[in-house]
Length: 134
Length: 138
Image (cartoon, rainbow over all chains, first blue to last red; front, side, top):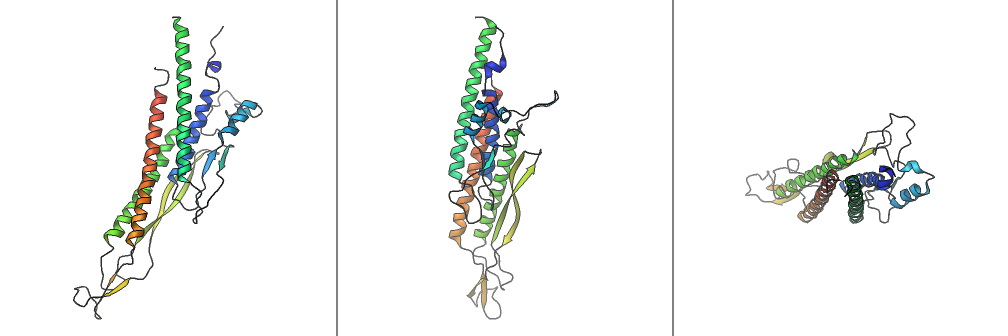
């Protein structure tokens, strides 16, 4: 039985890319909390997960590489999933950032990131054990 | 690595909020300064924030904060009748700026909270990155 890194890491290494992108978006929202006219943006985690599981839009987690030289970049990934937040209470200056919500989302996102890191770390130590044969 | 951009984003937010704190400090410090004419009186300053979408790739961008300018408050100065004041004009009036200390204080608290939020983002991201670097070492 060959050791397959893709199988060992499963969806988790790709999930890290999603959390990374989301970290950036949420930090933008928090930084622009006082900017007039700024519209908060986010990625719908469940939707991306559904797409990934459905397999119909597998490219949402990874750019389709049509050439060997293509490098999968987290910069361009999830561009389609980035959406403006729905406004519940708009500010007079057109800003749609709800700092409390953004902070909660940021905390949740970093917890998810750390969870995924933990899982990956365990998988790697599992593989290491397999290599050593102890 | 897009995660490095978070430092730019949060950094721009921090510098914008710091400038806002500076204007608040300037306004509060000059709240009681008087001048001999309506034109010479200090005018309260307020920064105008603007978000800058930096297009890196075709689809990717990052929204940093920029202070697009500082406006001077255009409210009339408040005249005070103080004939003995060395700066008083011919009619015996000195003018003080129309600065509401309470508004400025509220502004200060809002700016410092926003600054703290950005610092929190930075430290969280830094921690996550350090953990990522240690992946597989445990």
